[in-house]
Length: 473
Image (cartoon, rainbow, N blue to C red; front, side, top):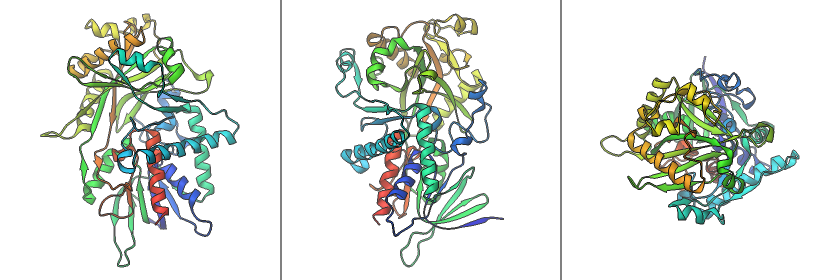
């Protein structure tokens, strides 16, 4: 029998950073004489219950029904890495909606929340790294590389989970209702004669009613959100898909850069095609991990702040963005086709030595074992040239040689390449400056699922922004 829950002031769909910080802001700023009733619905589990068998048993992904890496409280960032870049140069286009000063103000606010939680627990606050006055900017420019401006605070998977768990406890004390392992199936809008917003949110066995709905579905919910937009006739614009590999090499090769910047976001325009290739998600002394996105196995990376958990390797992604308009306009479907090919040939993630790739050889277990770089992920040795389109592969190879000029050793034979890494983005949803769906007052679409943010910091900031909009009404 379907359960019906009481009327809520706000129902938040998705317990990733956008939804969490929206709920925190609503609970924090609610006037003392008014109690906002808030609910958060997520298809994953509580943070404490998120356990990945492939990580804990060092085995390949077994396609769990609920992916502990991608779904659950804290979103995918809570268990893969916890990095907050404060910048308008990358990580999304929130500034296009709220303005650049406001976007930075929101990100600094989120950073303040994280710092305050750690300080109250007596934990030393990790450094806020900045590339704005870095000595490496000149070195990059001299080698046709562009170092983007950013301040970055890396909490690591370990400190990130402390922050997320504390936020969960705070929200529970504020009487926020949580509904885990619950999949929303549809959303109905029923305007009233009085002009009030009334939304009915359905799952397989329950129904909620709310005046405001905040959808923060994340990248893993992009397909679901696309269906919701179709049902409600909300306009979307074709977005991009990022395709590439994850590079793993000895930490010494990039240490002169990572010691100062932690993560360097570097863009290179290739000479062959004039395409942009960029570094993404750099993890000094981190580990390469897998992700399960709708049953497709891709590669990612993470790292810890605790010195005892660090490795001897650094990893980062090299990504090329692809947009499609006519006659084909589904960028995610293109990315999925490449992931399917990788999964078919390698049973998941494929790893290859750079030297083997250049010489047209398939890497073998024996050559990987003889490598001077010890892999941090159990992956199938193979040939990435059979998976990645030639143009993308040419761009990646050219980028590795370019990086070798500022970090000698990057293009060594034993450098490991894991594939494929794909970042799926939802179709960019047509929303107002309040991140509110046009023609649907009180329906807010935020975070990475909206297509407007692509980072933990901007996703969280978008949640704070819509919370303030709700509070001011």
